[in-house]
Length: 232
Image (cartoon, rainbow, N blue to C red; front, side, top):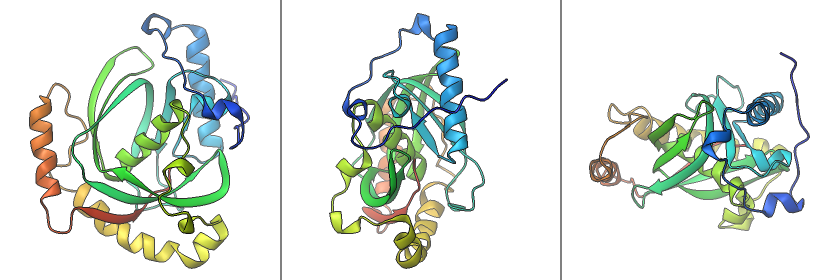
């Protein structure tokens, strides 16, 4: 199959500030939607992104693709198998937050610190129209929040709580990366590698998910973690 790498819109383009529309479930299997999904995957991979949302290529539908494989730019970031997310609904399971250093394919050569929820529930449809009800934690949860923000017209710049954290990529590598990597390694070990940190909880009642999340929140020094997550 021929690759189709699309142009990525940059901050300032009006479409990045609009709310995308839901995809009617009956349309998911149409050639038009399937072709758009293929374009998103090709464009994301060509740009070495952890994810991309449909508005970033000028298509105003609630679709995002996410994938993290081995990447020397962020070896500490847990893998995420290729995931196609359609019409997502996010629920925050508790108030635990992590400070994440993010970049974005639509904000070239800029990084900054944002607060992301550590434990979230995401309900969505995949490219076959199947329903998913999953829990995401840690940097993976941050990646999902970053991409879903795009569907509501938000960029990571809107979430930056201290504009003094903004850096170019070059200055981040030179002055900030080492300290962030050290901090995030501890965070990933606690949240993502815990025996309880199961990614998928399909059909588990929400109250049980919340109780499990509270056990994480009660851990020592668990209120705020300072970390680095490269989400595109």
